[in-house]
Amino acid sequence: MTVSAAVPSPPPVDADRRAIPYDRDDRSNYSAEMIEQRRRFVRECTGVELHHVASYSFDPAVVRGNVENFAGVAQVPIGFAGPLRVNGEHARGEFLIPLATTEGTLVASYNRGMKVLNLSGGVTCTVSADCMQRAPVFVFDSAREARAFRDWAEAHASEIRAQAEATSHVAKLLYIDPYLSNKFAYLRFNFATGDAAGQNMVGRATLAACLWIVEHAPGVRRFYLESNLATDKKASHVNVMRTRGKRVTAEAVIPRALLLEHLRVEPETLQYHAGVANVGAFLSGANNNGLHSPNAITAMFIATGQDVANVSEGSAAIIYTEITPAGDLYLSITIPSLIVATHGGGTGLATQRECLEVLGCWGKGKVNKLAEIVAGVVLAGELSLAAAISSLEWVSAHERYGRHR
Image 1 (cartoon, rainbow, N blue to C red):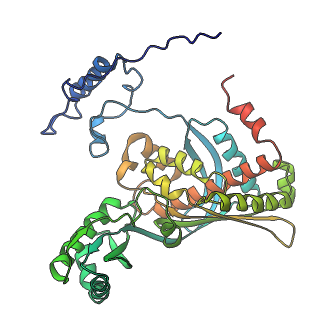
Image 2 (tube, helix red, strand yellow):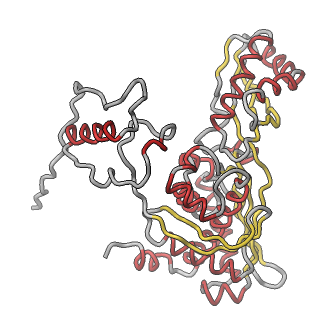
Image 3 (cartoon, rainbow, N blue to C red):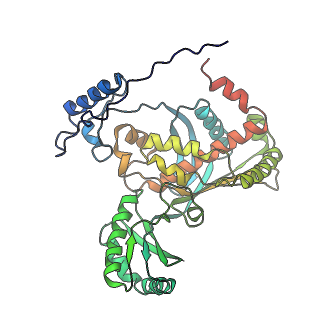
C-alpha cells in the first residue's frame, strides 16, 4: 500500500479582492512604487514572494508598449553556439549565436552542427520572398455580388493601394490575393514592412483601405478586418505557399569525410533516413518534413526580442537532401514563413538588443541579415540531430547533457 504525501495547495485568489494595481491615466504604471504594489498584490493573493522575478537590470520605463501590469522579468538561460559561417547576400562572415532555452543538449547540438558546416565552407542562405498580410472579409447578399466585388477591387487596386500606404512611410502594398467562398469575398493584403515584423503596421494600413472600400464599393453588407486567412499566429498551408514574413533557404554541401569523422554517419545513411522521415511526416499531416527547426527559431526569438508566438508560422519547413556526384551530402531547408524584426517590438529591450548587437543585426537595414542567420542555425540543428538519430547517439547525448544528475 502506498501513501501519497499531501502537497499543499496555494491559497486561492479571492475574486472579490481589488484588481491588480494599475493607473488608468498611465502616468505611474512603470514607476518603482507601482511595480512594488503589484508584487505585493501577488504575495497577498498567493503567498509567493517574487525574489527572482523582481531582479532585472534595466529601467522599467523601456517596456512601456511591450507589456502591461509590469512586475518583473522571466529569466531564461542563454548559451552561445558557433561561430557559424554564413555565406548570405546580407549576412556574410562568422556569427556567434545566442540561444535562449531550458532544453539541455540544445546548444551543444547546434554547436556541433555549426562546426561541421564551417568545415564544409559554411552555409549559403537566400531570402527569396518577403511580405506580411492582413486578410479582411467582405459580406454580400449572394455569391454573384461577391464575385462582382472581386472584379471591382481589382479595377480599383491603385486607389486601394493609395489609401493603405498613406498610413505609413514604410508599409508598401505589394499585391492583393482575392478568395471567394459562399457569399464572402476575402482580400488577402500583402505588404512589405521594412525592418519591422509589421503586424500592427499592416493592420492599420488595411483598415484604412477597408474603410475606403466600404464607402465606395456597392453591395457590402459588412466587413471584418481579419478573416483568419492571414493567418496570424497559426500554421497554415497558405503561408507555406504564399509566404508570411521571410521565405529563406539555407543550404550546404557536407563532404563525406567530414560526416564520417565528426558525425559518424555516411551520406547514404542520412539520405535514406530523410526518405523514411518524409513518409512519417506525410502520415502525421505535419507542416515540416524536417526534425526540429522550431528549436532554433524559438531560442533565437526569445534571445533577440521577436514575437515568440510567430514560431507558429515559422514551424513550417521543407528539407531536401541528395547525394552529389562526388558522393557528398547536399542538404537544404526552406522556411517559408519566418517572421523576424530588427527594429520595433521587443528588439529594443535591454537583453534582446544586446543579443542583436552580438549578431550585428540591431536597427534598420538588418532584417534580411537576421533571417539568413536564423536559417543557417536551423540547418546546423537539422544536420546534427539527423546524424545523432541515424548513428544511434541521440539518447546517449541527452543522457550526458540533458539530465539533472
